[in-house]
Image (cartoon, rainbow, N blue to C red; front, top):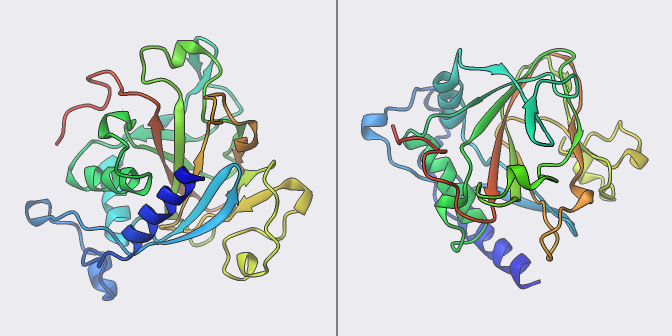
Length: 269
């Protein structure tokens, strides 16, 4: 309960910051970021509690329009077939048909990293954060049901431990996109109609299928992966549902239990 209270207070504090990096002028939102004069400032995002156990929070306007455009430009032509971690290896399987890449750590990426860390409380060190990963999904592509936490010590021992938490943010969603939601089959579906009316939850899905979040640019989902004793929480099982038309680019932000080995995150740009 203390952790939950701390997290909410941190998020609410961050949401009151004045954001000059996101302008009400539509032209400004599409203007390239000038890294020579760039100042890291965080948007006034809004947090909505989805579930207290497991902790799942929906975040509106977590990534600004200029940041989203910058991420797409920064990673253009760097995407490759996504891998899947299984046992003691990483392979390319039909359960994950997207493309992925790692975002180089320039000033904008480091700003987003600092936002993700602050959301979790000021005691979360920067050294626990994995490199930001972007994932691209086109028509018929998906990521079958999986958890972000690992079952094998091969991927945790000496590598920062297990993944404590996850963000999945929507960087780009094509106008004609259908499908492509993020489904948590073991979460209880929310009762209030506002989740449907505001386009957050796909209410065309059967309630027994859990909760499916619609892909909405700039918004993010945050959840905690581990139980208090350090074991993985099976209730955080989730899937990237098939894209029926259009496409989306998402971003994973993962936090480990311990510091990552030097060199994994790469040098700052």
